[in-house]
Image (cartoon, rainbow, N blue to C red):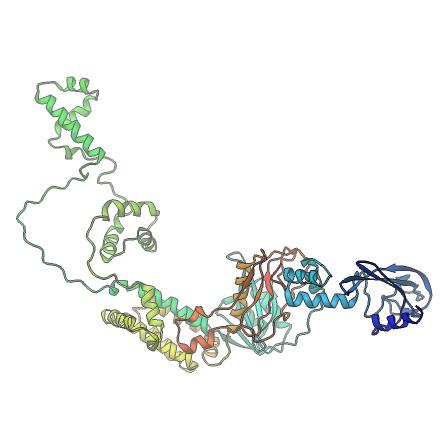
Length: 600
């Protein structure tokens, strides 16, 4: 046995100094290795003073990597030393074996590093299942804690930074995502989207030269105050998106031009006498009841009964009999609180009638339109007017006109990419409205300037648009560009954009929707961008909350209808994506954490 122990030392602890194996016990399921430390002295963790004065010893039993399908447990006797430095507040301390143990550790360092590798590669639930396979079962939370305990990677000050907002809770809680555009890696997460927070973050990194952002005022203000030396670049996709919204509003204002003017049909001349229309249709319960009472009262009066006698026979008051007797026809009785009464909808009825003749039969849509015209009431009155009055009125005969959004899509799409049918419809629509023709010309000139990076032509474009008074929405868009002219000009001139930032924001949305991860681990600081999948992969795969595989490939649908160069410039790349999710953590500081697992 004495000859075997040195070989066990070399086999089990070949790279560790100061450990002596005393015995090895093997049972059916466990291999117990008894060892002790042999170092003559140890350094105090508080003051760093080396001491050789032994205070006592105790056993530590860390788990090690399994061998031959059996658990390996190391029974290690370590010593406590007395710190001989008088000014040190620590009187005694336990020795640690570098490469084997650490404070409060229940696993050896090589087992710990193996579990960390599994957690980084397979995430929480999948990694926990893998550890069961090689006889080191741990929970998914243990893997996440091990990953959380890793030191933050050292990052240099980026030169080009992308900034964008992301909703932690849509409409209520927003944060700021910062990405290194050159390395396409996330840098940091800010707990809000305030200008002061961004300015403070940028002020700590004076080496930033370019900031890619959208045209939000708080980002512009924060970037100006925090990094006045940096060049701000407005994202081209946001510019194109804002232009599309303005163009849609212009098309909607001229929606009357979308329907071709129908030829009025020739009405045959009829000599029939115009019939007197009753305000109550035949079959209405009030109308039938009133007609029956009128006929009965007049029949009794014609038979010679007095009005008081008729009132007693029918159980009515005398005043009611008098009103019926004075009315020669039942229609004269069709008056009351619902007849000929002015309402707040009367001023909007001509507009509703016109929209009905144009083909808009959606009561909710009609209510939204007059709501924009300061109609003060709710949807119910418009619905009642449509169902009682407009239903049954003739509508124009012919093909349904294109919607404002469809026409906007045709205008925003490159002419060479339009199908033949859409191109003909767009040509017919523009022929009916010179304002829409001018709008299409402005959009195409802006698209040419955007795709060819000709930002020097922006002032001329703004001047041309400002001269068009019939298109207030696009005129307003051009005036807003003047407020951020330098950043917009840089965005239309330089190749930098926020596509990579939008890609990371898309990942946040996908994880929040698919996973709804909620972690209660003691995260202290946000951890950002640990690489799990090598660069070049096109999707992120992981395990969802129910253990179902989830694929989170980034799509390029947001700019499918744009010009080809715009799609290449604005769509985000999926190269080098890490399987790391941003999720909401119940921290006291309301900070965000990047949980590096899809299986939480």
